[in-house]
Structure formats: structure tokens, C-alpha cells
Length: 226
Image 1 (cartoon, rainbow, N blue to C red):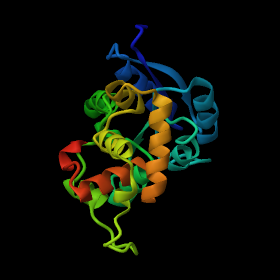
Image 2 (cartoon, rainbow, N blue to C red; image 1 turned 180 degrees about the vertical axis):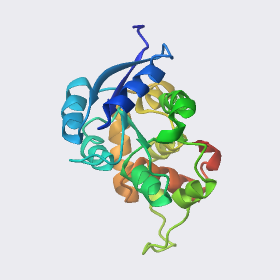
Image 3 (cartoon, rainbow, N blue to C red; image 1 turned 30 degrees about the vertical axis):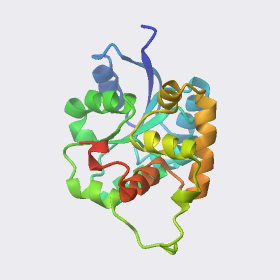
């Protein structure tokens, strides 16, 4: 494996489907499967051991759903990206996955044609949504929700200039490492800024950050790789 090869972990309860995914992943020299699991619990354990760059995970598993896995691991493994690969194409599943912290969503029947594109998109720091899915899903993800905030008291104004800069770059899809390289600071400092700005804005996931930035006009819908 090359020095820049990214580690991929696969979590799905169907052995034959896992084998198919491994075959597809092996076609791109940028990726290598470092581990696989057939249950959510095993997936959590192996993720903590291997700390993969990207985890491919099904939503529906007998013991723990992929969304539950993401919620359990996302803070513990801040540099790991999670891509859902599922038979479910309903908007509610997709929205919930991104809100939990997923950075990509692929339909199983599209895996042969979409998996490598999705992995490369996510590896590049962008969000990925299977092209077989309706554009309406994207708009639902980004739509403004009614909330109780006073419109005259914008929490964005409470961010420091550096936090605003980090927020914009993260919303554009850059990883913590990518932001650090551009700003000449450490990834840990970026993570500290991210924690502080998310708390100030009352946001809990990357997708909420993207949606908030879109509402402010800091980014546009082209941030989403479709």
C-alpha cells in the first residue's frame, strides 16, 4: 500500500455484499480495506482499533443501526468520515443519516457505479449524495427550519474572526487537516475552534453546519457533490 492510501472499513451484515464492496474498493489504488464487520457492535470495536479514514456502513443491522454507530463514534473519531450504503432511499432515512454525522449516502443498487466516486468525493473533503436520489433530498437537508431564535440576535456575530474563517472552510467541505494546512495551524487547534463555534451556534452535526452556512449565504448548494 502507498503512503497516501486511505483505510476503508466495511460494516454490513451480508458477507456476500461485503465481498462485493471489497472488490470494488480494490479497483482504486487510493483505497484499501483495513477491516470488516458483520454487526454494529463489532463495527464500533474495530473502528476504535483501526481508526479508519472512511467507514462504509449499512443502516439496517440486527443489533445496532449504522446511524447509531455514527452517533457513537463521530466525536471519538473526528477525522473518520462515515458513508452510509443502504437499500433505503427514502428522504427521512437520508436526512437522519446526515444529521447524525454521515458525509455520504449511497444506495446499494448503485454501489457498482457510485461507490468509488463517493469515496473519492468524501476523501476530498466534500459531502456525497448518490445521483440516483432526488434533488429534493438536498433541498430538504438545507431548508430553513422554523426555530425559536430571535432574528435580531444572530449568534454568528458572536464568533471570533478566526472561528468564522474556520466555519466557512469546514462548511465548504475541508477536513480539519485541510483547514490546518491552509491556516498554518494544527489540526487540534482547528478541532478546538470547531467545538467552540458549534457550541456558540447551537449546532450538533456537520450537516447542520452546512445548512446554517447556506442560510447565511456563505456557501451555496454546489457544496454538495451530486
